[in-house]
Length: 137
Image (tube, rainbow, N blue to C red):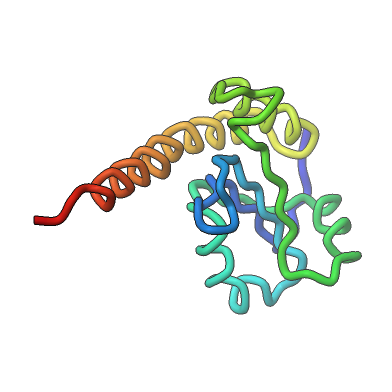
């Protein structure tokens, strides 16, 4: 099936943990307007560690026209029900959510990149947290 693409992007990554966001999650962010790349680059960097970018389909872009925001974010919380810290189950749910808009080959790439990115994002954060809590001599 051929998917007609727009000029707007979809960013796949893992949410950044901070004072506000305290849970690990797959973060899927849709651009809602052309100026999002220039004006919102700093915001995107603060929200997620991005591991894959693709173009939106025309149908996905139409949904964004009705929004007054630069980005729309959807998250799948890894440590909550129904996933209960099951990484593969969470990745499969994301795969299933996009199967009507994205070719299966690209979905497999997204899944693989998110799996690699999970280790980079959250294992690095754990190492940093452990070293920052260690006593200073």
